[in-house]
Length: 629
Image 1 (cartoon, one colour):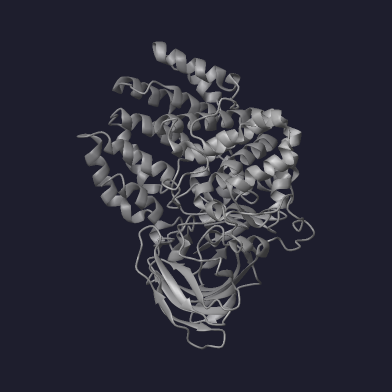
Image 2: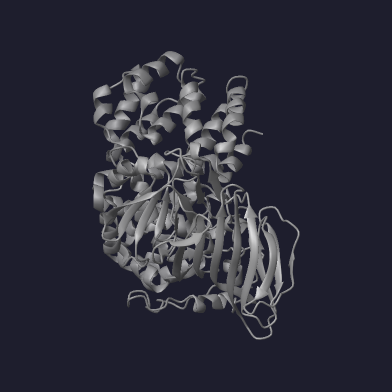
């Protein structure tokens, strides 16, 4: 039996978009009703149907010497009359005290630690609807503190955060669930030599805060998921890319970063033409030190990027298109819980490819879509086509914040939307998807709501179209539905022929390799025989310059193949790569590959990880810890 979650929820009504220059105040296409079973997030202690946080005001100091943030979080609370308890999420926070707005002490308790969730912070708020939490957070897993020698400049320390999915509760006491959207503001003090940026618009110039520090102010006036609050501080500089776009990074990296990101303003314009106005004011990016654990993080107004996307030829800027697309799918309309992560990542992966098509042409877009399809097929094969982890909507046993498979959440999600587009036509599909973003702007969503909207505004009672689309099969069933879109074999015809020729007679066409795109080179490596001897690997490496590749995606693909075949000359290359790069996508699989080689790779992996572990972000460490036990 399904119950209406009248309060979260009612959160939908409370998070309905305010007027935003006349662009985002449109009424939803259908009533935004979420059911409790769809919308409930089991990975938060919060009880938003009773009392929820609607706004967070941070006043924090960054202490680099002690690797600690300390100060206050002032929380605006929405609750019915008579509700006298507020429950927050915390994980390792040291709570010094809680007061109401007038400074009166409020009783609170910090509950027992629960793995995967942290600790509940329960506050007796009485009639108070503004709560001030004084606290500190030391060694928070969301925050990575870098010593000067870990930066490009080598002179100043650096700090950056990574909040998704549930790490922000390690440095901010709030209700840390994607369905509980909150506006926020911050005042941050830091050593005067450093510049602070956050995922919100800066409010004026930095102010002198005394004691050798400056204060920076930021404001996000739109309700966002709590994981989207982000911070970075270091010796960073800014360069304009366009009227509303720019890049921050260390001075030593600014030229390379700005060159690689030259198409950013054009990407924003292309995205707007596809699916409506960009609603966040500015779209800036920060290129972080290489220990950043992800390719990118779509924090509003300030995308966080790994430097590993810099290849010198813009061949990896699909990553930028992906994070930009999140400004609509993920930031504007957000999965209400982690069972529906595909609503963020799958929709975004589809949108990313459409931006790439607009900026770089149909050929590149088709090739990148084909690589995505191959990743999906691999994920389904690895997990089993009857495994529920290959469904888009994850069942409870798979739906933890880090659950699921990227080949499903990202790639099957994108394939689903390509299938719908193929069946209904691009013009009709684009109109519906734009309406989805407009109608549910600044709101959480579920798979059920997504399909309800699609049926109401795209299918419109057409029973034949309903049968063709197989919507429930895509979202709720495992494997790949029979109606799936499939890539055009011509996208990689030349590359696949070259891979077949190599498998037959080990012929290496260096001239063809020289003119291939990154996608084509990745396809060729993926199509090579998985078992190769030392001589064959050496010939490939010498002819194609694989170990010297400046493209990190190609270098990673090569190292994965070489290590799987116990190719000793690749070991120092892998050691160098894993010592300077912290991106989990690269790091975890390479350690996994070495650990799988008993008696050869395992001791190499253990010795290397003993040296490199301290330089990785907590996200990457967690992934490698599970492999190098």
